[in-house]
Length: 219
Image 1 (tube, rainbow, N blue to C red):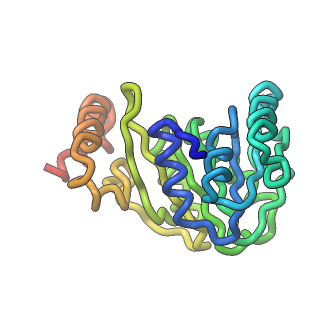
Image 2: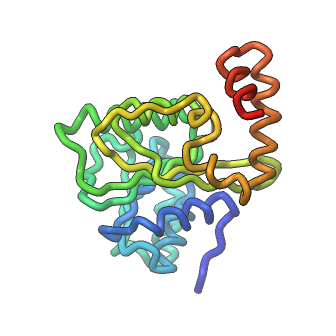
């Protein structure tokens, strides 16, 4: 039996499925657990670890795992982000549905707790806000964006990133920070998303010279 997801969660699952080196998913801020249940039931991943900072959502994730007979393949953990989570080489770590600054904090704490990053891990990140700030922080802290996708759901546009650790701080242009280094190459596929970003930044440009310069450079 296949389990349907919302458009946003399906986009996240599809992007995560491209990087399943170890076969294990770490779902940070798992909430109801539907993403992990879908990925396990459809053999996208062999195992999953679900974390959440709140007991209520984690109990819902526990129930979803039990009711779908997945207890031998999935475990839950009450924790803040990745605190105390054992991350192995090749794991895929999904952090979605929270602010970009919160995502930055979770990854930053994880980096501070480890002398070296596990090999070939992939972060799948879907921030609800502060996406440009997240992109800029990632490139300034040794990460590179491998891919970007976008979708529209219930009146909102969402962008998801696949991110890998390179260990090298790389520069991003302001255009790449605001529009996405990969997304800039995909706007023929996402004209509505491009138009949405243009509208948002045209409003913000009234009080932000940095954004105003980016828009002028794209005319």
